[in-house]
Image (cartoon, rainbow, N blue to C red; front, side, top):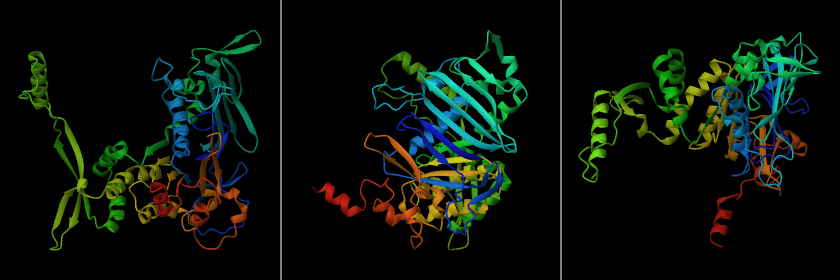
Length: 442
C-alpha cells in the first residue's frame, strides 16, 4: 500500500515535491464515504483508497505518473539489460544552467508484509549517487542499508542479505558485482534477498496505464473475459447498467496488407521477398481475439456486435474493467493518466464510486483528470484531491486541497467553482468556452 512518494529534479519537477496517500486527521470534516483503509500503526490512522490529481494542460500531471513509472522501471528492469538505459532515462529538469545542481531523487514509503518501508534513490549523470532502505517494524524506523556511490553501510542483523555482495576495503564496505547504474536492492532481489524481494515485489504491483490509448490493456482485459469466470461475472454485473447482456470473445485471422501483385513494385528481388512473406503468412496464420458485446433487440433476440461499433467511451470502459478488477483482486496499485479522456462525467463518477465502495483489501487507485465536475464531496475527501501547477520558473508544484484551510467551511457539494475561480491555483488555461472564444476571435 502506497503511503507517500516524493520526487525532485525530474522532468518538470525541480524542487522536491511530495504526494501522500495518508488520510488527513487535521480536519473536522465528516465524510460519509468508504474512501479509506484503517491502519492504526506506525503513526498512521488511515490510508486513502484513491486520489485524483487535477491541473491545466502542460502543468505536469502526467509527469507525476512518469516519475512513479520511472522509479519502478529503474528497479524492475535494471537487470534486463547490459546497458545503462534505465538510469539514462531519468531526465532532469532542463530549464536551468546546471542540470545536476542537485541529483534527481525519488523516495517512496509503503506498507508491505506488515511493516513500513522507506526506499529512495538519487541519480546524477546516469550513475546512482545514493540509495537507501529503512523499515519500521513496530514504532522506530531502522536502517537496512545506505549506499553512497559504491560504498555501503548496512544493518548486519536485519539486512544480512547484503553480506555476499560486499567486501571490506580499509575502513569502508564496498559493493561488489553491482554496476553504478543498477540499484543494489534489485541485485539482492535477483538472488532472493528476503527484504529486497519484498521491495521488488511491491514495485511489481504498481501499474501505470494511459487513459488516452486502450491498446495498452485491451489484450489483458480480453484474456480475462475468456479465462477468468470470476472477473466475467463481476464485469457483466456492471455492464448490465449499460444495456450489455453478455460478452463474446471471437478469434479471427489477422490480415496483413501485402499484395504480391502490386505493380508499383518494380524490383524483382523485392517482389520475391514479398511473395515469400505472403506465403509464410498464409501457412502460419496469426490469430487475434476481439470482444463482441451481446445486446437484446426489440424482438427479444440476442445480437452480438463488434465492440468497435460502440462509442469510444464504452470501449474504454470495458477495456478498463480488466485493470480495475486486477488491482482489487490482487491488492495492487493502479495509476491511470488522463482517466477522464473519452468519458462522460457521470461515467467517471460511476467508476470512481464503484471502486471506492467495492475495494476491501489494500489496493489503491490514483487518477489524473481534467474534468472539474469530479471536484465534489460526493466522490472525494479534500485529502484525496491534489493539484499540479507551474510556477513562474516553469517548475511543477504539487499540493493537496487540504492545504486550503480557508475553504474548509464551504457549503455545497462541489469544489469546482472555487477551482475555476483560481482559489486553488492549477486552473485550466480558459475558465469557460466564452473566454476561449474571445481569445480565438481576438
